[in-house]
Amino acid sequence: MKIAVISDTHLGTKWGTPRQQDPFDQAQEALERALQLGAQLILMPGDIFDTRIPRQEIWSRAMRILASALAREQKDVKLSGTVDKNPDDISSVAFKGVPIVALHGNHERRVKGLVNPVEALEAAGFLVHLHTNTLILETPAGKLAIHGMSNVPERYAKSVLSAWNPKPVNGAFNILMLHQAVGQFVFSGEESPTIDLEDLPLGFDLYICGHIHYHAEARVHGRPLLFPGSTERTQLLPIEAQVPKGFYLLDLGEEVRYEFVELRCTRDFFYEEMVFDNVGIPQLNDAIRQKLHELLARPRRNPDKLPLIRLRLRGTLAKDASRGDFDQEAIVQEFADKALVAINKDELTAPGLQEKVRFLRELREHRLPVDEIAMRLLEAHLHEIGYAQVFDMRTLYDLLAEDRTEEALEKVLEVVGKQIEAELRGGRR
Ligand SMILES: [Mn+2]
Image (cartoon, rainbow, N blue to C red; front, top):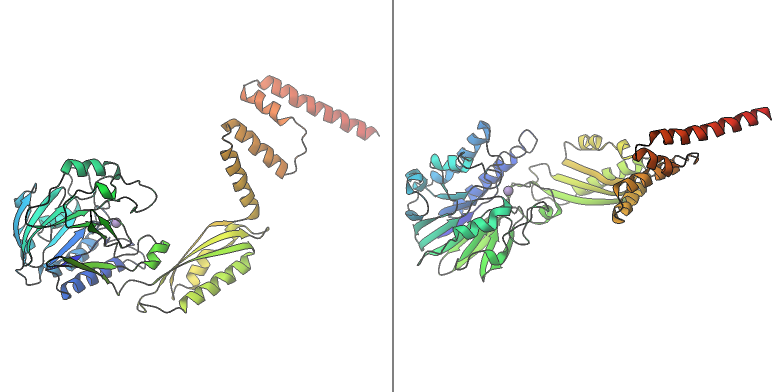
C-alpha cells in the first residue's frame, strides 16, 4: 500500500512574477510522479493554496492538477468510517480514483463560519478535509486511520491538540497529521511553538507535519515524524539551497517504509554571502558581477529554468560611499536573462553609519532613561558636526524639559549678549 505525502504546495504564490508558474509545475510533478510510483492514497498536510481566497486563475489550475488523482482508475481504498466527522460532508466522488486526504494550513485558515479553500475542494469531491477528526479507510494493507488537525494559531495549538485528544483506532495503522511548528521545528523566528515533540499523543504509528518548508525527519515516542517540506522555494533561506524539494512515498506493509522523492522541475537556487571591508561602489559592482558569473558557471540540476540567486551583502562601504549609491536593480536587470537575482544590502554599512549603530547599541545596553539617551544623541551629533560648545546644552535641555522656557531664553540671551559684546570689542581693536 503506497501513500504519497505532498505538503505546502502554496499554489498562487509569486503570482504576477516570473515565478508564477513554479508552484503549479511543482505540484503537478509531485502528483504525477506519486501516481506513476503507484501511490494509492495522497496526503496533503496543509497550505495547498497560498491564500485564503485564491483568484479564479489559481483555482482553475489547482483543480486541473488535483483532478489527475481523481481520474486515476482505482478501487483499492474505501471509506470505512469516521470519528468526529460528519460522513455527509464526504462526497463519494472523492473515492472514485486515488483519494486525497488534506488539512488546511495557516495560509488557508479563515474564521469560524467562513469556508476555507480546502473545505471548498472537499465540497467539490476533490478531497476529504480533516480538522480535529479521523478518517478510517479500508486498504489492501488493512485498516488505516488518518487523524488530522488543521492549522490553528500557534498559541492555541497545544490546548486544541489536548482538547481533541485523538486516540489510535484499534487494529488500524494510525497516522497523525498536523500543520504546526513543533519543538525545534519552526517556520521562522516569529512564532514560538507551544507543541513540543513529547506533547504529540502516544500510540500512533507515524506522525506527519506540514508547515515547515524544508524537509526533515525526527522521531517521536519511538516512531517517525516526517516533515515533507514545501514543494516551492518560498523563503530563499540558506537551508532552502541545501535541502532538496520533493515529497514522501510511504510503503505500508508489515511495517512502514518511506523514501523522499526529489522533484526535478524546481529551480536551482544559489545562496551566497559576500563580506566586504571598506569597499567603493565600483569595486562592489565588479565583485557582484564576478560572483554572479561564477555562480552561473556552476553545475546545474535544472537547466530548463532560470536559477534563483540570492546574494546577502555584509560589511562596510568606503568612507565616501553610501548604500544609496549602490544600484542593485541595475545588476538584477543586467542578469535578467540568465538568472532571477535578489540582492540584500541591508547589512552593508557606511563607516559613519556603523559607528552610529554601535553607539545606539551601547546606549541601549546601558539601559538609560529615554531623555538621557536623547541628550547623549544630541551631544554626539553636535560633536560630529564640530559644534563649539557655546551653550550649556544640558542646562538648556533640562529647563525646556521642565517647561521653564523664560529661564531658558534668559540663558540664551545671556550667551548671545556676551557674544555681541566680544564681537564689538574685537571690532574696536
Ligand atoms: Mn506553508
